[in-house]
Length: 513
Image (cartoon, rainbow, N blue to C red; front, side, top):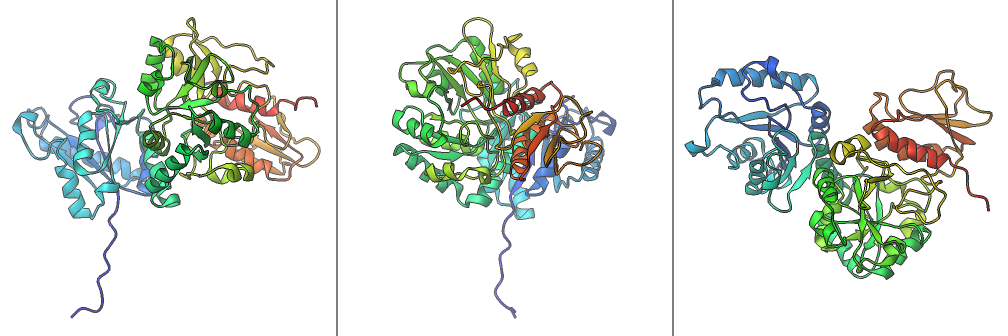
């Protein structure tokens, strides 16, 4: 006899991970655990995913059929792999292995979703809310066939097969960014419920000439249809932004960017191919249909493709570019969480798409292509070194007090909290000035005490973590009732350049009345 109604257990979402080239270096057949070489960020990324998803590994080991490895070799390596991941706090539910060659025509070789269906039955999984992450187009196709979502990483064989990807494939640099993408969707589901329905409502409002807030991987943006001058005017009004400061136009991909550019030089193509979707803005000459209000009357337009699932889906659903500065009052710190929005911005916005914290945390790098040497207009989420490795040395123009900047983020004072901010010359300045002061430290609190508040950007000294925490930490200090904030610069390399750029502009004195 039954004691009562049976309550169905909700199905869990999962992430199915390719092995070689996604989690570890693809070095060919591995017969010994000593040959395992973990890719950077694997452990941290998987720990973050494991908090919300069941994790599985699905791998081809054709070396077994070819007689290069034995089944026992592969199992020994997998036991060591699982042990290491468990020691790092990453539980893998199962590793599924296909030992066959393509010619054998087996059922278990990707892009067949056989192993995903097997896992769904055994572990009670919701494949519609699950993901497949890998460095080969067949990983993406596996996701499609299973009714899941695929993410393509550019590690391993990712660059080799990049041009084979079907249109619309979501591409990320590596496992860290894949985790950012997946967790952004999880945050959107938790905060907005049916976030696709919220997107549909946002699209309807944008088409009606309204404005709204949406997340990117850098900061939250306040956007409108880029080709609607009246809607763009509402963005300027809501932000209290001067008309001489141009906006960035967000596009769903390189093809959309070329529709707005009068010319799209080879350097632009190389940069877009390498860093889009991602935190890089490319400034090129514009077509006449781009409204002058977007570009502040300049003959150039700033374009970027954001690396955030909500932003990309919004752009694709709208079918048009969106012009969007950061969703803060002009000159103030940018919001990296929806709860950081100023009340004036919330009141002006016709929708707010909340997908939790932004992964990068500082605005995009801006590079201008004027026909000669590329010019760095703003350091940001893509390090200078990575860009120069692709297109050669960048020209870095001197700071200017010009009131007609070529791109956003060029004014001497910007990104500023309400509280006065001063830069520390070194950690030797450990004692606070007289009064109630807070300290923004890079890696560890200053010795000596006496600070009313202390915020540390990254105890591990990780510049990516520091950048992601920068604006949120500044906001907490700004809300602390302090007389001033003393900020320690980051190392002037990689993302440290972007952090220090924001701190220098925030510390710049207010212009004279």
